[in-house]
Image 1 (tube, rainbow, N blue to C red):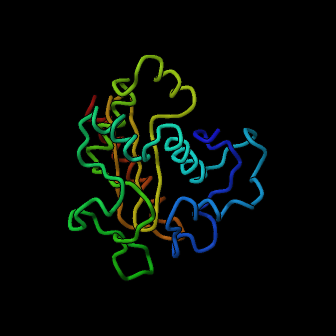
Image 2: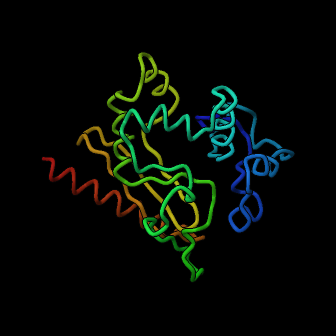
Length: 207
């Protein structure tokens, strides 16, 4: 239910002032939703919640006895040879990070720490292809993953938004990173239109 966003647990990033005053630890993040009522009864509906991912990462650390990024590094990044994926902005040279902008805010907000991982488009593409061709999984794991989730992801934080999908009909991973977001969602709608046009162009070339 956590993976499928069917837990009913409120989304921590929807709490007041989350983006202007982000939590400094997992514990502080969880405190923001601890006493909130559930959005719905578990497994009765779907609603995206970043709290689900936070709880999954906490479970990983408790079960493995190591940090979530170390686990991801050992199980995913190293086997796939992904050397340009990082645990946080503190692990990279900031000169190598794409600037991020929020409409109405003049300054570059790329140094804001929202607890997010960073990766190049190439690393994300290699990761998605490995999910789809099964090379990332041990025996039986792909069937489990396929039964509970899909092999693509969209998302945004202030200053950045991305669409990353595998298109089976053309056997291609298409990734779009954009470095401008807005409150109204205009930039997101524009990105979806552009993404779909790019995929159409690739389909025509494939033929």
